[in-house]
Amino acid sequence: MLTLTLSVTLLACPLHPVSLDVELGKRALPGLPPDLARQITKYPQAFRQGAEAAFAYPQALHAVGPGNTLEEALLAQCERLVQAIRNHSSFETITAGFGALAHLVWDLNFPVEASSPTEAAAFVAFLRSRLPRIPVVFYSGYEMVPFSSRESLWHFILTEASRVPPLQKALIEDFQRVGGPAFWNRFDDRSTAFGVASVSMNRATSQYVALASWIWHHAGGLVVPFPGDGRQILVWKGELKPREAPLPRLGVR
Image (cartoon, rainbow, N blue to C red; front, top):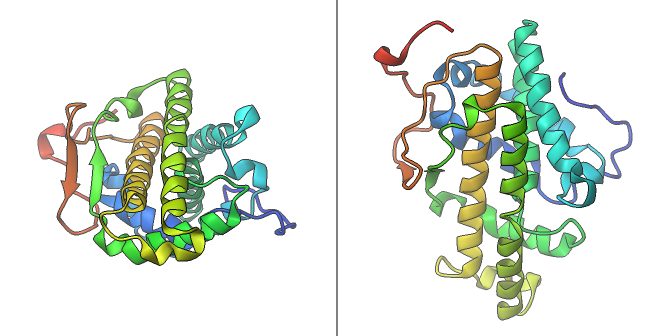
């Protein structure tokens, strides 16, 4: 497997469960390079196992903070996957690596600090209760990330991490409004918490597509640019499955 396997699990991810990584993987399918998406769908158990392995990483790899440890882990996972694909590793193993990537992307976007387990559990409970009501959205502005350099990808990861604190602040204020995390079920679809949940889910989905596409492109795969002009969002209404690559865009790299 492409992920670290740790014998000590007491330091596992304090933020979010693996089920959210699986949900992220499903939502990302229409945005992924079609050839990559079709391969990933063949090994759902491997994807989950990869996410579970990442769940067991030390706490420092799950939170944005001093030293950019999580951000470095994301970049390293991207590079590791590029090398694995180029080395013709089994796609079951590669899919596990993409499952680990999903967990790290969610960590980057999780709008609760690692030092707040009560708030994290409440947010997860609320998010799970609202997932069917959160549309699948692909944000524009990520279209050129797959074709960028390693240095540009690193800047992209740092920039995306810097966008999370305002969501954390907004969620804390909404918890205070309803009386604390124990009363998360007082949130409705008009609440700030619902907005935070939607933005976090869809940012994670869009970033995952961008990172996976970067990996696929730099490993020699064909990346069909996702529609977008940098200003609009795409709300996906169809089935969550690999999309068909437009024939005129097919080619050999």
